[in-house]
Length: 267
Image (cartoon, rainbow, N blue to C red):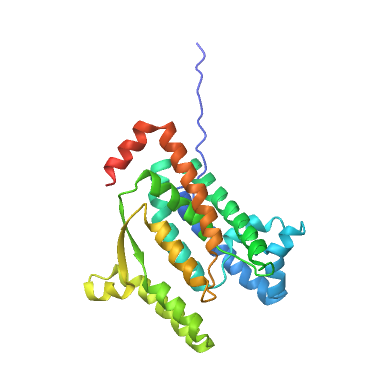
């Protein structure tokens, strides 16, 4: 009697297979950041702005439409990258465990794309068509929007220290001071991990319920922007947040039992 053997091929694993999607996106952002530095060095700032940053005037003329996507993965400087990836690590890791990789991926991408669209529209409204924008913050605010709906009473900290330093930097506007402030911003953020309560206070952490965080992060800065020219795309943040809120309410309506359970667990 012939014997049949089934040979199972062992699936080849790549180094990043076990990484969360959040961590993969962070790594992708870091890679793009260093690639952008090389491009700026060899091709110049204008090339980078035209082909990677989102610029309302180019979008409205039908050019550089791909920058809706590329602008989500490049950043204006090391601190910009650090601050966004720091936020993404904690917010993204939390949400990814709740809604899964696929839903997380589409929320992230759509929030970033809509955030870019809001930025272009705001440029048209306020006649700032030549100012380019980069960064993952629109997508991150989309993740915050979902969490604001699904776990509204979960506690989270808004770190005011970096915002205070950023406003100080804009007011002073001296290159040497800017470099010092960038270093201070990183120190302030890392101070959160200290076991010493006095050192943690350097970050000026303010505890908020999840539902309040995105609004507190957008509204005050939007008001300040009328008086000080802050390097923050509040319109992109708002666009990403709108997508996140809509998707959060969609999940809540489609899966009422699951979302109510999540809401109770993370109070």
